Amino acid sequence: MKYNKLVRDKVPDKIIANWEISIHHIADDAEYYEKLITKANEEYNEVINASNDKLIEEIWDFKEVILSILQIKPWILEKEIYQDINKRILVILDIMLLNKITEDQVELSRQDKKAKLWWFEKRIILDETL
Image (tube, rainbow, N blue to C red; front, side, top):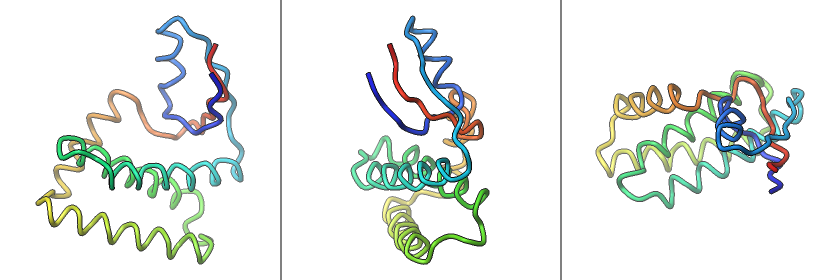
């Protein structure tokens, strides 16, 4: 199956553990940035469509991607992307307020997910699985 998407650091290991072959590569700065922007859009949509029991986890996923973007290009985010991300952050903050979700709850979710799958630090682009 073909993917061509940024995946968390431990995903290739999980694929191998399921007796599949992971074909992947490490992204350079430009590709990593592009894939993070795509991932931010995906994660935002997942927050918007999340059920109540998955909402905190999805909020953290979005936040994690935004933090990753800011780590590699904190001072040169394109204006349109910056404005779009700001709008999405405001929507997510509204969702958190409406659902009485605290930053502490989001952080607990982050710790759990990090322990299971790690982050995007290795810049792994999953090309396909066999």
